[in-house]
Amino acid sequence: MYYLRFVLKISVKSEQENTIYYEFESDDEQLTIHVPEPLTYSNATHFRVLFDIIDDMKSFKVLILDFSKQKEFDTYLIVFRNSLAQFCLERNIDFRIEHSNDDIESVISLMQTTPTLAVENLQDKSQIYLYFQQVGSIVIKVFQDVYNFISFFGELIQKLLKLIIRPLSIRWQDMPLHFTQSGVMALPITIMIVFLLGLITGYQGALQLKQFGADMFIANLVGISLSRELSPLMVAILVAGRSGSAFAAELGTMKVSEEIDALTTMGFDKFEFLVLPRVLSVTLAMPFLVIICNVVGIAGGLVAAITTLDITTAGYIGRLEMALSLWDIGTGLIKSLVFGFLIAALGCYKGINVKGGADAVGRYTTSSVVAGVFLIILSDAIFTFIFQSIGI
Image 1: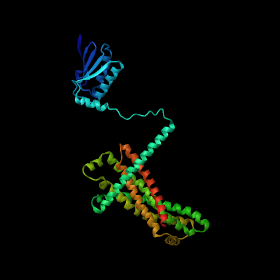
Image 2: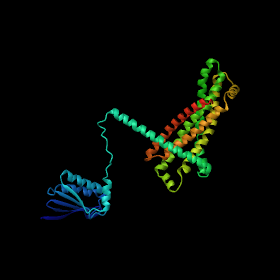
Image 3: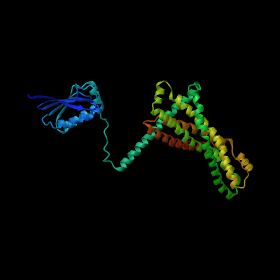
């Protein structure tokens, strides 16, 4: 049998001269390639030349890639191996690997793993089918999200009940900071919005009441509508946009940067350390915001009544005392407590469950605001039915 051995040397001027990147051993029907140099992306330029060289060798029917001299590699080894396999497949050449070690085999098996799930051929599906399939996927995700939130909500209630036995289990020192950011810092925008809301309600109501000579009932309209519905609702929506989104962004960033995982590893409970201080701060701040906004909104209605109707300040306040009861104020405060609890809980839930990178933080923050406003409206509707059924 005729046996030929030859060595191809390639010089690299920038690093060293006469570096041997591969060696050939060839007989009549078999070509063996040895790779002494590291199979890394930094050397990829030199290994690409190999395909042009072996393409000119038409006589061999078996190509063997020998890894006996290979000591250092990265994921380029997979690219190199797959390229040689594809080269042999296209030319009907038998491709083999010899003298591979455990490290090389583990990398090849890992990178060559293919998904076991079959990919559905969507080209044969109609647009109607694809539309309903997309809608179904969205519905499934929504129900999964609702289920996860209920689980989170139950665990949150459990941690709150635990405070009765162990009141020092949470970080009370964080409460003033969160109370200031969620309550005190929210006063300017809530006061301005509710004042304008009271002013608008007063003007719109005055136009209708004036037609029937019921000018004095402007106090009833403004006082009851603001204290029972408008003030708690608007304050909750504003706090959802401020505090709910802030909680989602803060905790989401901590989740992405693995700070929450680090706290859990160190033995800290994420509910007691991160969630409970925020939830309690917003829940306690909401009634104070609503009380202040009630006064400001009624003042806005007073401005509208004085400038539009033939009514005095004393008459407006006197009628307000007759029309407005403690139940009207109390129902608004009860709503504000529930609204604040839901806003903070949802914001923390969205933040803790962020999955992905920095872009996911933005998506979950937006989702926390949208879902928070929806929960506020839904719970307000439930409260309306409950209060109506018990006659409040």
